[in-house]
Image (cartoon, rainbow, N blue to C red; front, side, top):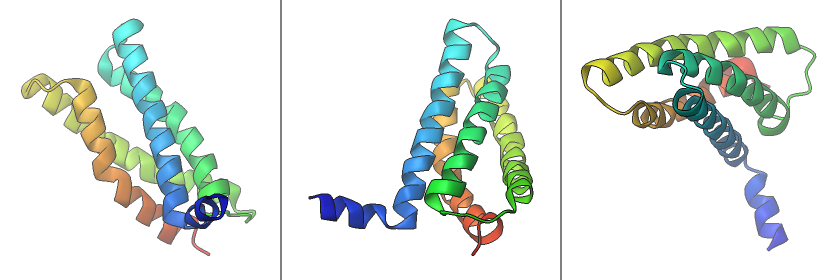
Length: 132
């Protein structure tokens, strides 16, 4: 059983999926806590959760998923954040429209958006940020 788990974990996409799932859960949990328990407006909560989860995601993707040992840390960090900020901006617009105009629950929109950007994040990081 250990051999099977080790073999599956050796695949980059599996490591990426684990890291993405952990970052997405961190993002969603912080969004939910900030909005429902601390009573922060959901768009501000999305910004708070973004900054915390993107920091976690960068380290996980660099060191665990792509096993990148290069010294281009600052360049990679900036590129990673730029990609994330572009999609965060689009997410904020979609969140605002879907919640305020279409009356969807903010957590539903957040979960759907996480699923949409799953592949986009992998390809941008694999081909631009952590390419070998």
